[in-house]
Each structure stands twice: as structure tokens, then as C-alpha cells.
Image (cartoon, rainbow, N blue to C red; front, side, top):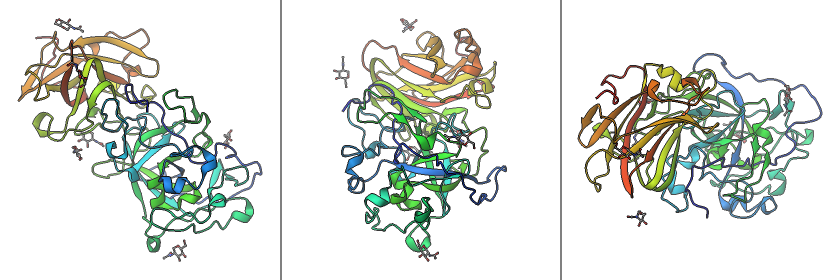
Length: 437
Ligand SMILES: *[C@@H]1O[C@H](CO)[C@@H](O)[C@H](O)[C@H]1NC(C)=O
Ligand SMILES: *[C@@H]1O[C@H](CO)[C@@H](O)[C@H](O)[C@H]1NC(C)=O
Ligand SMILES: *[C@@H]1O[C@H](CO)[C@@H](O)[C@H](O)[C@H]1NC(C)=O
Ligand SMILES: *[C@@H]1O[C@H](CO)[C@@H](O)[C@H](O)[C@H]1NC(C)=O
Ligand SMILES: *[C@@H]1O[C@H](CO)[C@@H](O)[C@H](O)[C@H]1NC(C)=O
Ligand SMILES: *[C@@H]1O[C@H](CO)[C@@H](O)[C@H](O)[C@H]1NC(C)=O
């Protein structure tokens, strides 16, 4: 096992064969429009596949790849980094922060892909003919048909394949589970990974296939659900289904606007907030959410690292129009955060270097060192810092609108453990600046 010494990268495969989503025979199909489209709370039409799964089920398809994944990918190393990270240890289902039946990847072709890490979507299955692209029906010929290979494979609840009424027409109608079958009208998933249109070789995880993930490349909005999320809506032997979806506030389940997709100006509240990936590096230990360990009894993220470790929070592709969380805070805005040593460490201000940057382009601004600047507030063992965004000197062409990440790096000589709490981009800093004391 290669371990997790650097931020997770693209981490999944689509369950279906990588070929032949785009059908050749053009044929008009009835369009079953979702209820509402443009209003907040309106449902939109999309499509879903699955990745990962129970070995017992996946083992029915030994020709797809080696065990235990059988070419279906795994959900444990989602590229949003939403798991508890213990140095070099393997990441298990137990390390995941969200239930495995509520996890999904978003296709990076989807219009609201920027800042999708952590965002929540409500998803309904629709018993409709599956669409490949545009209005072209999804064709069975040329695809890997799970139902043809193992028609009697039961899901985790012992349910059998309800059949495909369009089989004779080389098309697929996925029958959603209904209440009688123990199905759910809708489920809510957290985005924990991406489904790249083009997947590149990953030297850390050589078992993964490279190539084009066709379902994540077309013009149909696409989710890659975890196997366990998929089977809440339909039998996994279908492999693909039509869905309706809408983005929701993860906490209140109130609907959110679809475009631009929601990105929280708070990067870390009681969890890594919607919009942001969690990328500890060279860590001995890193907690996604240590309960009650933050300022005022909030959750905190705590890191134990050597001298060259740290934590990056990034809003993926958020330099795109409509996103730009740093520009939203504005030129008078600030990056604010609270930090404290863990109880086993000497009291005082953790020695951290804070910098901003652009993840995709690997461009970084000047940094500030907590040992050389002043806290603007203190509560308990927590110190608050407020760094004016305008004070960071960034490479030419990387103004606030191009920035999409914050990094906290240890600048201690040896091992250190510290917590970070309430990390936010604010437009109107209330407590003054850490540079003016
Ligand atoms: C999908 O269909 C659109 C037209 O609706 C077309 O422009 C595009 O090239 C198609 N993409 C693929 C991958 O077939
Ligand atoms: C549920 O779906 C099954 C087929 O999948 C069907 O036989 C049954 O009539 C449906 N029940 C209801 C209440 O719609
Ligand atoms: C944004 O973050 C704040 C602070 O943690 C949280 O209270 C709020 O629920 C978040 N909003 C959404 C829509 O997720
Ligand atoms: C705080 O963290 C715990 C896990 O340690 C989690 O169950 C809980 O949901 C978090 N609280 C909030 C408000 O997110
Ligand atoms: C941080 O600032 C302190 C105090 O000015 C200094 O001793 C230390 O070398 C600085 N560290 C880094 C990594 O800049
Ligand atoms: C730093 O922590 C690591 C992991 O806990 C440990 O193996 C190492 O011995 C520590 N180094 C020092 C100098 O304490």
C-alpha cells in the first residue's frame, strides 16, 4: 500500500465499460422533463453510474480486473480527501467521514463541478430509458453488461434484478426500486470525489485503469455514485440509471441555487465546508473533525506532523467565473483562522506558515509566519489571526480572482501538533489585522 503521504489525487473508475456510451443509431426518444428546472429547489435531469462495491457482488465479474476491486474502483481515497488520515496506514471504510451509502463523485464536465467537494445533492431515480448523450439512447451492444454476465447476482439486501423491458431494442430502461422493494424516493449524497472525463495514470495506485471515462464526458449531467448509494435507488446490475437531482444545504437540507454551485466562504466550520477539499500532507496524523476541540466548543481539524508537513484546503477550479471565493471576500477582505497547540504540546502559538495559491497552476503567493505576526484575539488556548488578502504578494496574473487554496505548513524544527478552527474568508474583518500590531 502506497500510503497517504501526499494529497489524494484523482481516485476512481466508473463502473461501466469505458467504451460505447455514444450510440450510433440516432433515434428520437420521448423526453420526460423533470418537474422544474430553473428555480431554486427545482429538479434537473441527470444520469448516474456507480463505483466501488461489496467484493461478494464484484467477484461476479472477474474478467473486469483483479480483486478486491475487480476494475470497479474504490471509494476510500476520494480526491476530496474526506477521510481521517493516519500517516502511512491504509485508509479503510471506517476512516471515511460520511457514510459510504451517501458518497458520490461528480463528473468534471458538469457545469457546477467547480468547488463541488463536500456539496450535497438530493437524487431521485427515474424509471426511464437511459440516455447516452444528447437524446441518443444508451446502447447495450459494445458495453460491458453486468446483467448479462451475472443475471442472478443479488444486491446487499438479497434483491434480484427486475429486468430491462428495452433489452430487445438494444436499449435500457432502469427500473427504480419502489416502496414495496424497500427503495427510497430520494437520497442525499456528499461529493467526496471527482469523475474525470480523461483519467491519467496514477503511479501510486497502479491497478487503476487509464483512459476516457465516457459517461463523465458527454453532455448529460453525470454522477458516479458509490455502489451503496446506487443500490438504495436501483439494482446494481443495471450499472446506469436516469436521475433527477438538486443541490441542498448539507445541514438544513434547504435547496441551493444550481449555478454557480455553492461554495462556503467558511473553509472550516465544524467540518470542512462545502466547496473545499481536505489535503493534509506529510502528516503523522490528521483529523477531519475532532469534536469539541475548536474555539467555543466547535469541531476542529488537528494535525500532527514533522517539520515539512501541513494542510491545504482547496476549492477546485474555483478560479472560474461565478466562483472565486477570494475575490468575493474582496480587496479589503481577510483570511481568518484560530489555532491552538494540542493539549500534549507546550502552550503558545503554533509555528505555522500560511500561504495562498492556485492549485491547478501550482502558483503560490508570499507567506506569513505565525511567529512573526500578532494574534488579533485569544480565547482559551486558541489564538485568532487575521491576514489581509491584499498583503499576500502573488505571482503576476494571479490576483484574488485566480486564487483557490490556502496552505498551513509547519515551520517548527521537529514534530508538532496543532488544531485549526473557524477558517474563513471574510469581507469585513472585525478584530483588526495581524500585521498591524
Ligand atoms: C454529444 O452530443 C452533442 C450534441 O448534443 C455533440 O455536440 C457532442 O459531440 C456529443 N458528444 C459525444 C461524446 O458524443
Ligand atoms: C414495484 O416494482 C415492481 C417491479 O420492480 C412491481 O412489480 C411492483 O408492482 C411495484 N410496486 C408498486 C407499489 O409500484
Ligand atoms: C457554511 O458554513 C457555515 C459555518 O460553518 C455553516 O454554519 C453553514 O451551514 C454553511 N452553509 C452551507 C450552505 O453549507
Ligand atoms: C463534529 O464532528 C463530529 C465527529 O467528530 C461529527 O459527527 C459532527 O457532525 C460534527 N459537527 C458538525 C456540526 O458538523
Ligand atoms: C518564523 O518567524 C520566526 C520569528 O521571526 C523566525 O525565527 C523563523 O525563522 C520564521 N520561520 C520561517 C519558516 O519563516
Ligand atoms: C516524530 O513523530 C514520528 C511519528 O509519531 C516519530 O516516529 C518520530 O520519532 C518523531 N520524531 C521526533 C524527533 O520526536
